[in-house]
Length: 280
Ligand SMILES: NC(=O)c1ccc[n+]([C@@H]2O[C@H](COP(=O)([O-])OP(=O)(O)OC[C@H]3O[C@@H](n4cnc5c(N)ncnc54)[C@H](O)[C@@H]3O)[C@@H](O)[C@H]2O)c1
Picture 1 (cartoon, rainbow, N blue to C red):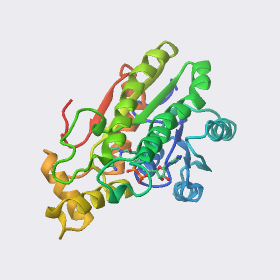
Picture 2: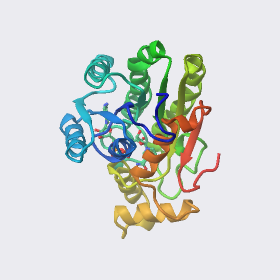
Picture 3: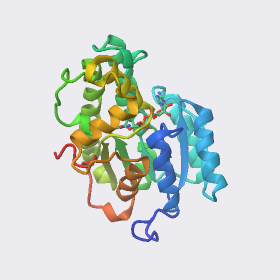
Picture 4: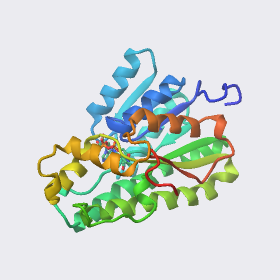
């Protein structure tokens, strides 16, 4: 690590969960562009393989695997593979997440299944992921963990108004848990020279936000004539001072900073990348 140029990630290895598409794939591409090798995994193993194939075809280095973050064994196995095939793990990005259980988009109210799914993936999946790399990082006395939370986990918004259904409640609580987990893990791992931070994305047009937009459309008569993407842009304009959505690469750039030597004195922080939509 000592030889790495400031802000660069040459000779670093990053594990990224949920990297078959969306934000996870964007993070993988940015880290590779800074010189890192990546181990990309996803519940959808074929999608993770596509992310890795595209990186390898462009001259980067990537391995892929099918991993369910709710299954600690599957994560342990992938971490072991990464260490033997890429030489170690310097960076871990728990990114996999779900907005709710099946049928979320059509419902106003949350169900028991929304709580179960968001907590098993967004919270337990997060702790399972960090558990799988923690001892390895402690042994080497170095590491960067960058958790993908959400600005929705920070402060209450007007749930229930303008068609924003309470179906999102379990998701928002799970993301608040992710931020608190970031604080506690930073305290635990700081003495081992391991930085733990979170990035809180705002609004990105991925399959996750498409489900949210469909949910808004189902519930709000004002949105009846709009496409899900138009609803998404309407919400972006209404809430973000910068007036534009974020991209997976925007999130990846902040992850790259938090994974680099440039941020060595930053730990236990949750950084909004949200166009100014929430300022806490
Ligand atoms: N899109 C947004 O606007 C937004 C905003 C704030 C936070 N986020 C967070 O960013 C992260 C990525 O979101 P996205 O928009 O790319 O979502 P997405 O739905 O497009 O992609 C999520 C990926 O996670 C994978 N995944 C789901 N369950 C999994 C499991 N059990 N094990 C392994 N992989 C699993 C999916 O297969 C998928 O490839 C999530 O944690 C999400 O909560 C997204």
